[in-house]
Picture (cartoon, rainbow, N blue to C red):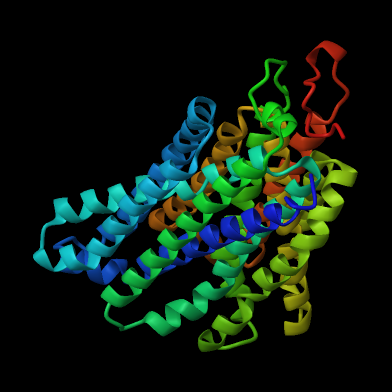
Length: 411
């Protein structure tokens, strides 16, 4: 890449990070106000959890579909920006209308608009990774993925505080602000893509065209491992963490202690993205999953300091898993299937979130906690260890005929 184009990957990465940050924060706003809005729309309180589960199910399907669609859009038009902006504007309009439509008392209309927002917002979940895969050089991609993950990590760290601040407020202004942020990020991303296309050399343009070749046969193992790791993550952060900290701090102090996981996650992204290409993405993810499985036992530590340290190490391991997983997906999908593979990975994360909601709705989460403090931790460790085992299996030497030329480990 020339010096004139050198700032471009950073610009693209920052816009992707902003998109992930604003989209995740908009989800937090939605979850905070959903019970009140659902009641205003005439929905029973018991349907709120079902609606959240339906949203995640839509994400499972739409994330993959939008990833595949982004591959096709790039193959046909070489431009993804207009599609991203159009989908995001529809998503923003639907999101802003939710607190306006809810008081009208129409459950069907409220659910329909919610699903419209869910489907269209998927345009900012998987396709941005496609832009990184197509427009950033191989050496620059790890930093771009790390920036995208940083957006998610910052949003997760801010979520408990944001929920506390928004509690009892009028929903209309937060929905408008969140929607404007998402739309602004989409516009910035479209501008970054246009700048990338203008500065791209003929050789880089040729390299970004889909090429025929063998597919990496390790992809199914990576996807299955990602689902297991994401299930462990959901269990750890959503079921276990609060109960663990409550042994030492009152409920009102959780807003300051729960983000320990995400603070360490954000701090670990930069070294994680530096090390992953050197060690091999799949090896890196497998090692991180083993570390996470091993450190789960520290969550029953006898002191708050040791518990916080264990949470911090778990956050670092999750950063390595998430960043390494998306880097592997981009490498396996290069060139022409980046959206498909990163979309499938996003779908697996949404599937794990759906499973967690189903566990809570069915009473399984409460049963796990009632069974003793070690039960959720043991299950979490088992899932992370199983994820690592799948990746170790995927790393076994393969016959030469099965090796894809664009292997995630090839450097």
